[in-house]
Amino acid sequence: MFDFRFYEIWRSQEFVQALIDGALTSFWLSSIGGCLGFCLGLMLAISQEKSVFWGIRYTARSYIELIRNTPFIVQLFFVAFGLPLLMDYQWSFYASALLAITLNFSAYFAEIVRSGIDSIDKGQIEASKALCLTKRETLMDIVLPQALVKVYPSLVSQFIFLFLTTGLVSEISIEDLTWAGRFISDRNFRDFEVFIVLTVMYMALAWLFKLLLQLLKRYAFPWAEAEI
Amino acid sequence: MNKENLAISISGMSKWYDDFKVLTDIDLSVTFGERIVICGPSGSGKSTLIRCLNHLEEHQKGSIVVDGIELYPGMKNPELVRRTVGMVFQSFNLFPHLTILENCILPQRRALKRSKEQAREVAMKFLERVKIPEQADKYPRQLSGGQQQRVAIARALCMEPKIMLFDEPTSALDPEMVSEVLDTMIELALSGITMLCVTHEMGFARKVADRVIFMDTGQIIESNAPETFFSQPKHPRAKEFLGQIL
Ligand SMILES: Nc1ncnc2c1ncn2[C@@H]1O[C@H](COP(=O)(O)OP(=O)(O)OP(=O)(O)O)[C@@H](O)[C@H]1O
Ligand SMILES: [Mg+2]
Image 1 (cartoon, each protein chain N blue to C red):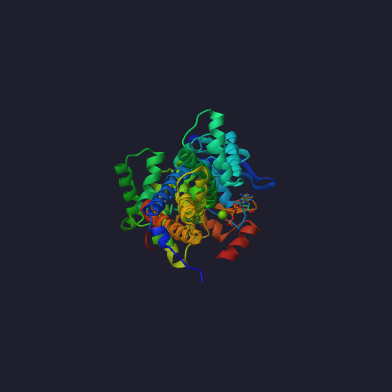
Image 2 (cartoon, chains in turn purple, blue):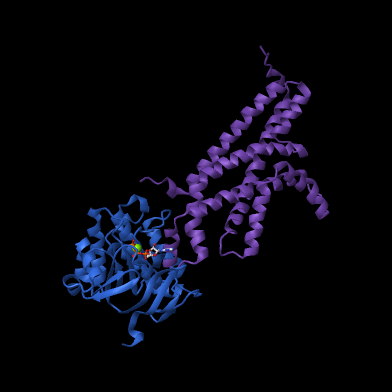
């Protein structure tokens, strides 16, 4: 039987610190990237309203297709290495990671929010029209709040899934949780133990995100929780 | 009659959905204060007709003038006419994410630019009128169907329309809730507002309608006072229809 020696991780102050810092980096990258990505996704979803100028509508559509049909690692490398060349300005890898995460998340969120908008009963829009609300007011006050609640579970699970893919940012030497794992196993050669610890820590973070997002829902959409 | 005094004046109006002609040469004049019941078999175009009156649907031929405002396809500001026309739908269409009070307040705030206090005052006035002020802070799904429909009526009235359109307001209700909504509508009718109501509630028609309009295959084929319409329908289709529902 394999002889587990987790002690080989715990005994080193440096390793423990790397894990903690890595987890924090992963947490913050996904949190901030998630928020920014959600805002951008919202705008992309709204851009696909029929009343929006067709140029913007098609640009948004193409962007979403582009992101959803290319691997994250390619997007990451493009933002980290390609874009700085094109713009002739080098920014930090952390900024690149955050930007890549934001751009990546936004396309997935946009698609989900869009499906929510499309699923709202036409009667709601007719009632809004009959009550003289403008298109913009109908979207912002009536359709969007309902759509967001409807797709909230899908947004949460998509976010968790995307969070789990962010380990790839370690490829551009971001010191996230995945990077910490590699850092440790390169030194103590206990790959299997490190792998197990990473699994547990990713699960714990995913669970934490779920909990936080559940609380956020209660705060943002109190009506969805009201008793019948 | 002088067109200026007409609430609604429709002449030679036709409407198509693609190739399918839903409404054919509709002529109809409604004076202010008049109460009209529209009935007819399913698919005869009743909903389409009243939805043309607040420009939820566009007509392709003829003219529609509502409260002095001419409606035409592709018109830029249908809000003008929607401001004087309130509408109540078969499926209530309350906003589920807003409380009853907020449902009544939001359109006033947005479309009429009323202050929060003023909108609230008006909302409470009409919620009292439909006899559910105590439900103001609940959400629509916490109310019965009959209560929801009365809220929908109050919400429309908050915009202080001159004309009210009803599209089968009681068809989606459980039988025991029909009368509470009809009572509200009768009270409203007696207050003197102009009303066009698509309904098969013939008791309601007898009680408040000045005129009953019978539609079949996109045409108005009979238009008469309720007593006359019910006792001596002229058209065989109307006879057949009355035979089925009475
Ligand atoms: N959006 C649409 N596109 C195409 N055809 C439509 C559309 N809406 C309605 N129709 C058709 O137009 C005709 C009239 O419909 P309408 O809803 O006005 O009838 P109605 O008299 O209100 O019937 P009901 O009693 O069933 O409500 C029907 O044959 C219907 O199938
Ligand atoms: Mg109908």
